[in-house]
Length: 115
Image 1 (cartoon, rainbow, N blue to C red):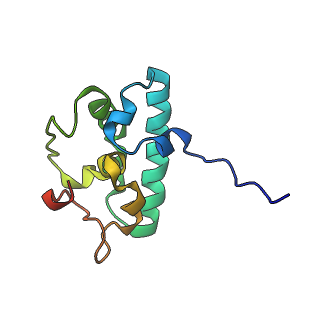
Image 2: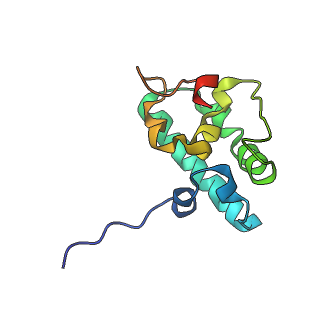
Image 3: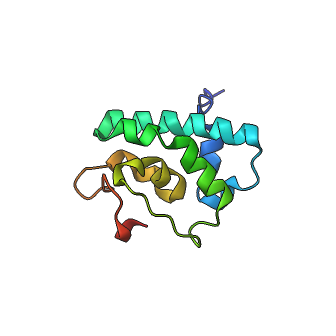
């Protein structure tokens, strides 16, 4: 029997591809999602470098905004672009988050061409 893959450490985050995937989550699941998003942000920034503190400071805010508002129809403006790493993860760019600040990768700040 082949060995099984290890269980994911981010099961809720694995299910979120776009913000609308969050809208039916319970309050407890949203808290868990925030914990998983925080861990993912730490892992990504530990690989690429970047502004970790600013991103960690807005994890719960980012989850709440995307759970309540109809993004991308409702527009968001981040006043400090390096707070947007969790936003990038929740809006379909998780698979590229480890290219943050790398040539050809995701911008370390907000960029209209990415959104």
